[in-house]
Length: 523
Figure (tube, rainbow, N blue to C red):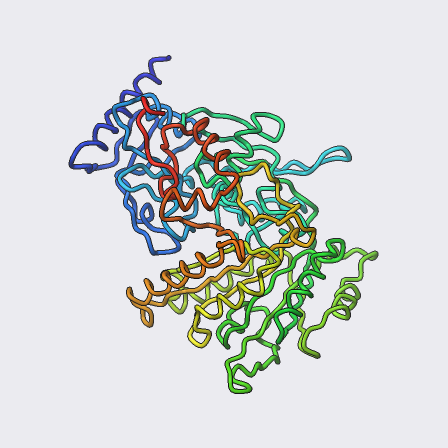
């Protein structure tokens, strides 16, 4: 070990002594050689959910992956400091404190270099981008578009970190066609819980590669990813069609995802009230003539909307308008209630940012978000819809309920992501993502109201994950290890074995609540 590295580890141990002392307070930023620790920041105990606020004792803003490696290797090498945990924080869009570390250390990944390198493939190779784990997807989009390229798979909101979404899954309307973001990665650089810096892929250190993808940060911190790219279209034909029958709505969604050569994006949402209709996109309300009758026939009635998109590369061989017309003729939406717009590819992908600006102007962005996300088998989607509507109040619901199909064979079973069991039936290749994306405006929903919403969501999740429906939560924080074991089901033993291999002391991602911190002697 060289002298500089020895001194750095001594300094880290001094920090750990401070962390483990009774006062657990750092008076000022500490410069330990190449490592720069800070007091807790305004963001280190805050996330998009605004439900959990667990404060760390220190924050590390690293300038290189080596600094992360030094910290984790020092923690792993010392049996004296067995309570210190570490969480990597990207853009802070967790819902239930998953990127927090109570009395531990938060690593703010946005301090890492954000250089993005684009490589255009030739006849024998794919185009790809090398991007830091702390970079945002919007940054990758802007850089790749300079070369006429873009990633194949997205999330709806682009101001999320690359390492953050790859640690969970990363889904949007392109997932049926290209799979989730974790299915579009060629290579990773990961710092394991033991402090090892590893470059891995499906053929090199593959166990770590697949463990980290969808691994909830349990096995390592992603510091670089190699992301598949495709040719980017200039424009997008964006279509919406409305329904008053749920079964017809889902049948048409499944029709669209069965035609990946014609369709590039499929999503949908439940129209619960006027708010959900007009807040779902700023691209449509100016000419939307759909006026649903929510209070017809003596009962409250909800509607459904499919939205799909077709890439327009603006080449003579493709008539996007004709393709859209042919698709609509095959669908069974409410007659005359379909609408379309043509937007730039960038504006289409960045559509939620426009919604964010509106919500910020109304002081409705930085509010609690008691979200619930579920993967639901096709066979249970109708029952799940009924369960959900029985547990929400459509008239005062603020937010969106997204619902759209995914295809199981687009997910790599080797990754750590958890999906519902397919039941062994061909039709169960189709599953649905349902996102209950509600806001809790403090002006109308105070603390007791928020807790009531969370209880309702737990009730829905408990009923939906029972064998009758067989759903699985996405982006969850379960209350105990027993609940996590139920969540992983037959994959639990594999998940535990990977933890023992790459983070045996349970240092990483304490906010997920899966594994306790352990002593070196007991690992």
